[in-house]
Every structure is written in C-alpha cells, then in structure tokens.
Length: 319
Ligand code: DON
Image 1 (spheres, rainbow, N blue to C red):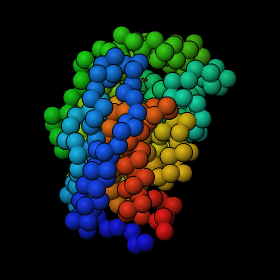
Image 2: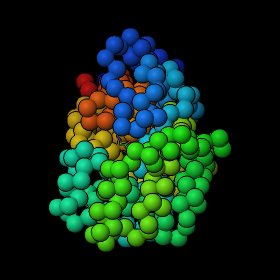
Image 3: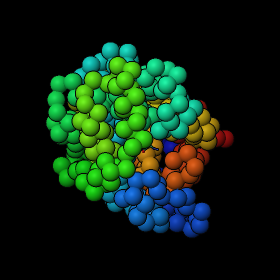
Image 4: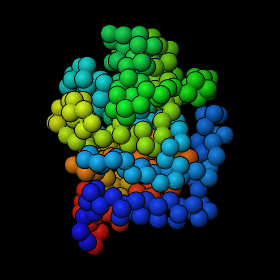
C-alpha cells in the first residue's frame, strides 16, 4: 500500500470523515475520568480528529473544534519549555525509561529514591514543573506555557479552564503525596503547593483537536514551527521528545499503543491523544471515554484506523 501524501487532502478528508462516521456508531465508548469531578461531567458522545500537515492546511472531522481538557498532553509542552531552559541537565532529575506502571503510581518512586522514570508520568511532570519554577513564579510559568501553546497554534484564545484546575486542586491528594515524597528525597526544590499550582493549571488548559494538532506540529518538523520557521527545539531534542512519546506517552499501555498504532503519542485523561507522524504531520483525536489504563478508548481506535488507511505507522504500512 502506498503511503498517503498530505497533498492528497481530498482523500485524507474522506479518511477522516469515514473514521468519524464509524466511531459515531460505536456503542462501547469507555468511561470518563471519575477522579477529577469536573471531568466526570463531560458528554461521552463526542469525537473529533484533526490532522495538521507540516506543509499544508488543517484537515478535520467530527467535534474537532470543541475545547477539551488537554491534561497530560500538556506534559509535552512543559517538557519543551524545560529543555529550552535547562537543556540536558534535566536528565539528572528525571529518567527516560518507560515505567510499566500507572501514571500516578507511588511504588516505583520509593524504589528509585525520588527520581521518576520519565517526564510523562505524574511525578516526572511534577519535577519538570519544579524546574520551570527555578526562575519564575507559578503564574509566570503558566503564562509561558500558554504563550507557547498560543504561538504554536496561532490562537490567542487558549486559556486554563479554572473550574477544572480548581477541581484538581481540591482532589489532588495523590499528586501531593508524590510531590512531598520527592521533596523528602531532595528532588523537589520549590514549595509543593507552588509546584502543584503550576502542574494542575497546565493540565487544565483547554484546547481543541485543531489547536492541539497545530501546537504539536513542530515535533513532526524537526523542532521548527512550520508556520513561522522559528526553532522551538533543536532537531535532536525534538527527536528525543518524540522518542519519549513512543516509549512512555501512553503510560503502562505504551507498548500496546506502539503495537497497535506505531506512532509516538501522548495521551491525557481528558480523552485526547496527540500523535506525531515524523516529517508528515501532527494528529489529534479526542473522545472523553477512557479505557482501564486512562487512554481514550475511541481515540485509540481512530488512530488504528488512520494508520491502516494512510500507511503512516513509523514501522511501515500494514499491507
Ligand atoms: O494529575 C493528574 O492525574 C491529571 N491532571 C493528569 C493525568 C493524565 O492525564 C494522565 N493521563 N492519562
């Protein structure tokens, strides 16, 4: 099967419409995240998908313009800012190995003396947030993250959803436990509540599939924002962020996602999944119902269908 080119936008539109139609008819839709009360109220019957090619206009279907909580997908952008700020020294405080454990697990952290396995599990992202606070307040760091997302998606309307942030702040005991443990081990410098104020707000940024696909596009384009030519990360660092997405972006289901889809991905409990097709496009699918590992059930299916139709898996086409 030939690999579908992004210049064939008519065929790509057909592929997306077909995926959206089939997903609309599926009755098994997963379950919305229950542990963040504000996310538990989101309507399950939504699905959107958007492709942002590195060399062409957006293509989308379904509810691709609807805002949702980006949750852990924000960890890609906080990691990007931290790498811009402190470069490779970040890796003294957080590892680069898949965890094989749930995203909020405490067990491994004790064995490994407060050094989280990777920046995409919760403790790893909390360390990244602490790094961002080295030279600014949590309000400034939230603004810097919003500025990065706005610049990349060319949309100044992107904001934190305050009610989701408040909901996380109220119910975030497990993240507090992770942060306090890392502080006890000497790997967290700023006051725990300052770090969590940044972490909860970054998770509560609301974006649509279309905005998020544009925001991830620099990772498909060797670290450059294709819209402006600006370097967001060096090509080497962009490749490394993408490698981490492949190995760790879907938590303890990262192996399964690589097996079924074969694209670097970052998921969030808001039901979004950002996938990078290196050299081709950034793609976001969203549906709020999650599987048991906390990844969107229908967005995962959408990506399986997308790679089957386009041949975009980095491991080669299906037939
Ligand atoms: O800290 C949390 O648990 C959430 N704000 C983010 C978790 C998340 O998105 C993990 N994703 N699958």
